[in-house]
Length: 452
Image (cartoon, rainbow, N blue to C red; front, side, top):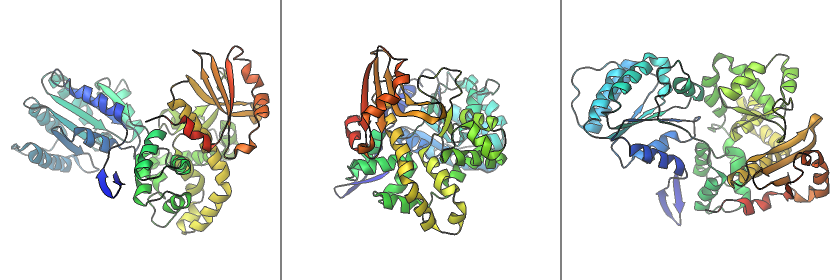
């Protein structure tokens, strides 16, 4: 990411301190045994950038598994090995297992980092690669001084490869790192380097990108800092945002993507219970919801913060902020997108923005409270038939403290007396807790932003 500060252009790497520390600690152990690290997380999270930044001052080799034959991949990899290590490679290598064996032998002479990007693609090219790697790894683990970083962006496949007990690489990884979006604090630091210090800009970056590094980078490259500039960046001819939902999810979902997309569109516009979705689609969606949550990690379920495990008061939400936006405004209005009628979509967005931004502001404060590390439970509260809904409940069971908050863009619309009335049934579960009622709007966010 290029940052310009007082007229000087420079490269700066943001966040990922915990991940870098973990990788460094792993590398310090390669003298005793080879280290296998899996780095996963959906596309656009910066897995490649993290790996290359971490390894830039170490001997390293980067291999990208593109969609081509194993023979052609091996030709490409051999050339990269020759350039990186300045060693002769005798004979023609046509199978990846021989590439991997060669690299393990080279690591017996000198330690290095091996990065294999889009590792899950071998599942389509030649799935026997995984059992080949397992055998070679087990034979060489204590003699090769190598740290292997397996990167993968098809979330479901990476978890299948490394976490299903019947798979050959099950249990072989030393650590699995799941890259998540930048925190609000990270986004604040990035924007400050661009002299953008106002909370509105920070909130809108959060609302549209959710902290996904690639989307932040796209906004920054267009110098999109106002709400209008961000919307223009997303809703214009040839915008990379227009097909982003398809690019991210179709490969994950496969031939049934239409069913998944219909469900996600409904969740994005507020049909958040299974009953609501099934009444509209006229079909059982239980299996689809389960896969979206547990296999694809695209949605999460939520329930009242004090609900019993067996409660039926369950709702669903799309975890990724941009995908919420994409399904609600771009996918839902795909005819207008295809005809280039972006003015129509902007009018739809303008009419709906108060609702959409209000929901995002609730999540914004929930994330801020989570980042404070002062509470062991954070969520919302609601009773049957959508009655007595409370935007934010934060609980510290150790110190017996309870925060009950209403969150709105317009603070004048918040009544603490009404909030106390809505919380009466909730408080029955927390009779001996110190309760604090809050009225929160964006202007209050500075107080809760973590200090650098």
